[in-house]
Each structure stands twice: as C-alpha cells, then as structure tokens.
Image (tube, rainbow, N blue to C red):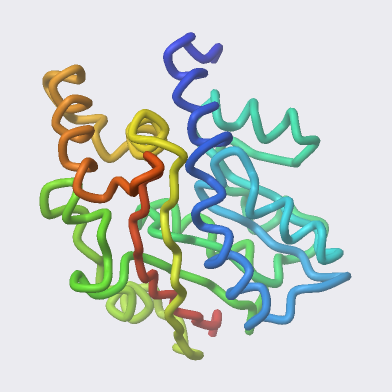
Length: 228
C-alpha cells in the first residue's frame, strides 16, 4: 500500500516533531532492562523507529512492527527492520528478549507475545496520574491512562516492577505543537479536522512562554512484566 500525501506529511510531523518527546521514557526503560549487545528487542507500534534506533545504539538488535505504511516507510529509510504485523513464534531466528508494547491494542499484544522467550520482558507504558499530565487536559480530558496492571494480569504475565518518567512535550511554537499533537492520531476521529486544529491551538495558548515556545509537562508510567 502506497501512503497518501497527507499520511506522509503526518508521519513526517511525528518523526520530526513528536517522536523525540518520549526519549526519556525509552531511555529509562532501557536502563532498567540493561539493554545491550546481544539483546533482541521487538517494538510494537514503533512509528518511525526512534525507540529502535536508541536500542541499536546500545548494541541491541531491534525489530519493529508498524501498521501505518507511511511511518513504516520512514523507519525503513532509517535502515531499520520494520514489519507490517507481529512475527509468528517460529519466524525469528530465536525468540526476542524483550517486547516494547507502549499502549498496545490487546490483539496486537496477544499476537506478539509468542515471539518473546520465556522469562523475557514485556514493557507497557501509558500516561501517569491526571494531575501530573498536561497533555490530556489540553486534549479536552483525554486520553485517560489505561490500567497497565490489569493488562499484565489479563495477558498471563508476571509483574516485575514499574516506574515513572518525566516526559515534557516542548515545542518551538504553537504551530509545531499543533502539528506534533495531531500526528499522534488522537484527533483522527474528529468530524471537522479544521475545527479540531483551531480548538487545539487555542487550548495551547495558556502554555505558551514569552519566547513563543510551548511547554507541556507530563509523567508517564511504565510497567515491566515477564513471560511465564
């Protein structure tokens, strides 16, 4: 499937503006797991692949899964191995050591788990406490944090710790903030895209600094579990 021009522009906004906002989360998880040479990681919904690049910089072999063809194309431009769907249990040379499944769809998580070795790590992440997150309030009360512990239990995984990470979303100006936040897909269901963009820009003005930059502090929570 060839990405549409609009989809390609949105994917580039994600890669060039928004994706880096989650670097503190990725690095905290990699530190916690002591990711390094010889580790094999599988990243669900990997976008343009920045999390994979950070893992590769530590010496790990990272493979991504991304359903969106525009984002998948950008990740492949970075010379990353990115699949359209999770691999089967028999397809990798050996099982993966860790699965990065930040806010995954239940079906995607279930389909990817068989490719992870027994005892391998599964990392889930989502928004932290509402009072510590600015972005959900800017977006009109959503998205609400998911119950990561319930996901671990439903998936038959063994809990193995959790943590919180400060992930501020900082933008050069309101226009960049609007483009970055729209690239997350959180407004994809809006019936009037132009109106949604206008309302988002207005909601961001209280977070503008004197130099025009926009600063949105957030806390993310991650949970580590193990495949039984």
